[in-house]
Image (cartoon, rainbow, N blue to C red; front, side):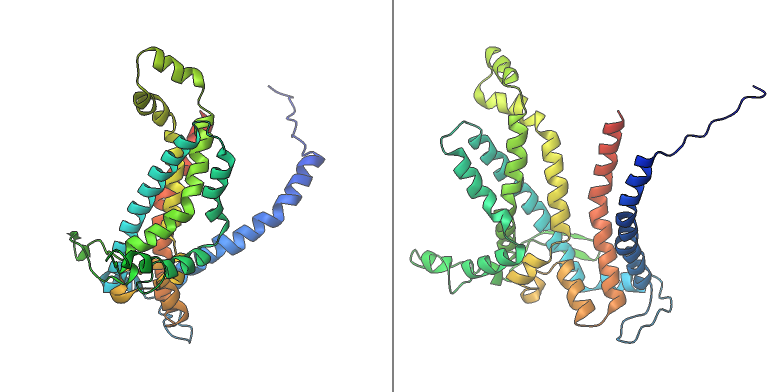
Length: 311
C-alpha cells in the first residue's frame, strides 16, 4: 500500500546485554573449536611430517597411508569391538540395575551412590587401578590363582576369529575385553542415573493398567516400560559411542597400544604419531577421521532432536 511506512524492530537493551555476554563465548568457540578443527583439516592435507613445517599440498596421501597401515587397521578393529561391547554392557547393566533400584528398596540412596561413585574418578585413575587389578602377576589374579585360574587379561595377544572387509581384517582381540571391563565399571553409573530418571517418569497408572489386563511383571517391562525408555536408550548409545570412539586416557593409562597393537585405538596412535614421531600431518589425518566417526553418531542425533523440538 502506497504511503505505508515499515517500522523497524528496535533492539532492546536486554537483547544488547544478552549479545554482549554471549559474544566472548562465541568468539572463543569460533577460534578454539572450529578454527582449530579447520587448521587440523588443513594440516592433514599437507606434507608436514617432520619437525620443520611443510604446508605443501599432499592430497589424500596421509589418509591413504593410514588405511593401508596395519596399526591403523588394528585400531579400527579394536574401536569397533570396544564400542559394541562397551555400549551393550553399559545399557544392559545400567537398565538392569535401575530396574532393581526402582523396586523401592531400603537403602536405595546408598546403593545409588555406590554405583555413581566411579563417575567421580578420571579415566586415568580408573586405568591405573584396573591395570593393577588385572595384572597377571598381581591383584585379582592372585586370588584366581588359588583356584587354578590365571587369565592373561590385557597381556593376551590372541585374536579370535572374525571377518574381513576389503584389505582390513576384523577379529576380536581378547585383550580389548579388559579395557571394556574397566570402561563399563566407570560409566555404568551414568547409564543407571539416566534409566532411573526415566523409570521414575513413567506413570504408575500405565503399569497398573497392564497388570489389570493380565500382563505378568515381565510382560509389563517388555511391553510397557522398556519401550517407553527408548529415548533414554538412544541418548545413552549416543553418549557412550562418543566416549568410545575418542577414548584415549583410559587405554593409555591401562595398557598403552599393547603387544601387536591388541589394545591400540586411534587416540593413542594419534598421540604417539604426532607428539613422539613428529608426523604432524598423519596425526592430523587421524584426528579428522576420529571427528568424522563421532559426527556419524552425533549429527543425526542432534538433527533428530531439533526436528522433535520443532514439532
